[in-house]
Image (tube, rainbow, N blue to C red; front, side, top):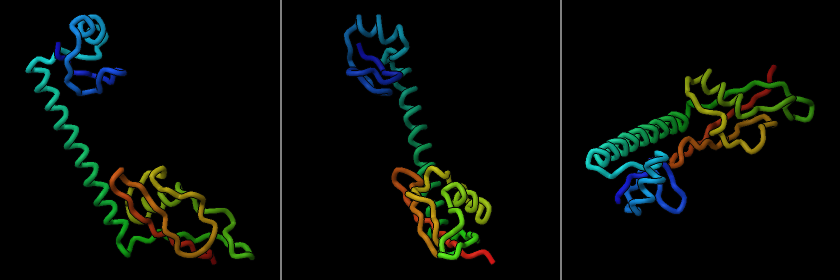
Length: 151
């Protein structure tokens, strides 16, 4: 019997996959536990519609990430910080990924999740720094951060 998997089933199939399985297994386990449905023409067309919708959403998200990358790559997009500096030239405190994300929103109205910023350690020195950001699985960008001394 052909079924469409509604969720992943170990050693059988993944969500959205159409597969031939034994009748008893399909009726007594998969369909009964709502892990699969019969592969009728209506269900197959529903599946195709869902897959098309998911593909469109994924393409939109990718396009948004590319647009955000272009905005971040602009020469005008430099996040400015003014911090207190100690006598040794190091910051009193540090600039974290959360602060960078907040300043991006405040200065440029660009929303970037702090978890997407790949800052290995907080910035503790003055000067121009580049912070990598993974905006999407296929899109990465560099955010320029300028830390200056507060007068």
